[in-house]
Length: 85
Image (cartoon, rainbow, N blue to C red):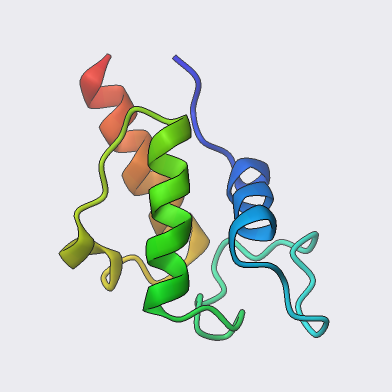
């Protein structure tokens, strides 16, 4: 089973919603709030939709607002992947 990584998440973010020039997704952003990175709930909904196509995990729409950092999103997806294995 392949786990989702920060590299996977930043790749999907770039491809789905883009990156503001003031944000460095190459930095360690694991604990940076998505809002501080310039991503609102609509942007995260798009990112999650794309992630669900790549990884066999489901992130309920009502859960997205609880996942405030990349680390929280990655850990949630990976917990689902582990549970499904």
